[in-house]
Image (cartoon, rainbow, N blue to C red; front, side, top):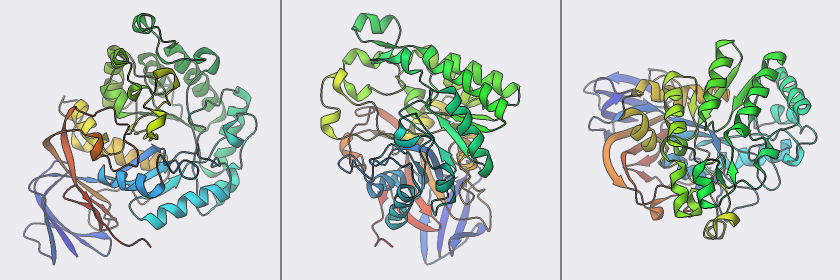
Length: 429
């Protein structure tokens, strides 16, 4: 039995929360237990849920494993993550998704929900075993070729039709491949000045426009990964006004960083989709505040040192995100007055759990609900250091940057995975 004393659920009044047998047993004042954690007025949130995480296992355990990635997730306040399919072998069969799911169960730091590939080998030629993955022990409901766009319109239509049978969702990496061949950064005046081939906004927007029309035609659920442009926001606004069943995510780095970082030629800032213009950043922030963009998802993309510490053109796309997501959202959305803590809980826990059909996460902080919880002090000021990353990789774009807010504690079904900001070591199951 544990009591979280002097905590503020969703930023409200200070109360005590008693956890017993994995659920919230009592909320009140003056509560006591054998184990007491004093929150000192910190914010209590439902455990965060990430719809877009790269855990790299199987195949690239030099960059990340399910165990190291979920430890980083716990430090970031996450109690559930969706593991993307671009592993080696690709998660395009029931066997591979079950392997990833079991690795998450064994590690025990966060629930791992595998994302199944849409196409075999991410090759974009024929559909993967969608039904078998849905029926597997991993209970897959999100399918994505992330890192690759399902660019064939007929194949995308078939995928949308197929997942309707089990209430699945296709999460599209919106990138028209012919328009982005060899692209290195956001296309604009700066890309020309730097001599780096541009990634035009229309390459994202054209796929989103096509796919919302397909989703409307088929009557299926569509999710758009890592929205990054003002034009994409307007297409989503139109689609939602028509009642089309589309949801969308934005990453923390697209809320904070701009294409100006490319002037350093430091490939730590190389990411897909690329960091965009300041006007795009303002647009996606406003869209998240309005709910046009539904959720924040990290696109946590760990890379081995040799894949980032090289010249820009040879470097891999991607950056770490799990451990810094909530501080960045605090910095860009809460401290700016665009979101309150109830809205943060919706966009980082409740709604991503609904999209991924994870019924036991993203729940209200109420008696009888699962004790998947995150304790966050929004006022702590800290300087991000790459050496502080719990991930096996160190490719954080925020190194040296001052952020506000730190996760103090994370509880997964009542068991502490992080206390005082430090991973709790326990024997794996």
